[in-house]
Amino acid sequence: MDVVKYNSGAWDAEVERGSEWARPVTAEEIERARAGDFSIILTPLKPVPREWFPTELRGLDTLCLASGGGQQVPILAAAGANVTSFDNSNKQLELDGMVAEREGLDIRLEQGDAADMSRFNDETFDLIWHPCSNGFMPDLEPVWNEAFRVLRKGGTLLSGFHNPVLFIFDREKDEKEKVLEVRYSLPFSDIKDLDKEHLEKYKANNEPLEYGHTLEQQIGGQINAGFVIDRFFEDYWSDEATTLNKYTPTFIATRARKL
Image 1 (tube, helix red, strand yellow):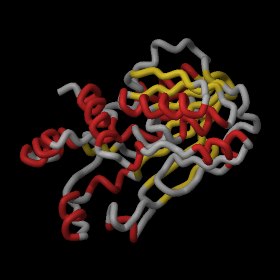
Image 2 (image 1 turned 60 degrees about the vertical axis):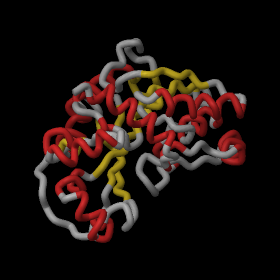
Image 3 (image 1 turned 90 degrees about the vertical axis):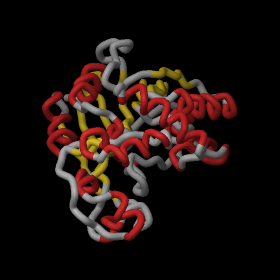
Image 4 (image 1 turned 45 degrees about the horizontal axis):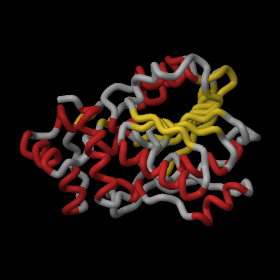
């Protein structure tokens, strides 16, 4: 199946269902960002330290990669960046556009696959903001390679992603019984690893399909593309989201530079 196309529609459905990742920011948050006081996340809970960003955001050409939903994109635009929102879901992009219209922000909206940024010239952006979303992408190598290509020298890539150990456990046992039972190996794929019954259930509910990429694919992939990773933190989620949260951080964030 065409997973990129399927997940585009599935994330449109997530918007309709009121996903927590599709709840637009308030006018008050925009006003604070205009004054230079902003806080945004690459992972579920921990705000990205201000020192991870370039000193001056005003006028900074910024690509928000697979981060639609009316949340981080308009905050960066309000802080003064020249923002392009590039997302696979039209509905997520519409939320960015809605906040932009409501708040008088200038945001360029582009729908497409993160593995194909051919519409953008080499060295177009100073900053790429890429929160947890590549877990819905089949192949990370072209994503990191394209990010490196479109970033200017001296530019910054800020990324968030799952700790892949999250994907080795039986999801239904975790959700229903709060039991961690190892069932899968890494790298994980809903399409490859779920039994037919569960996969068909996900598809019938129009739920996004996920991939548990290894740390070699996530961190090693950035390095192989040419990036130098110089900042790193881990983050938790919630015990309701996964029992694993009681025992280990379940998300990772990195800052990578194109030197």
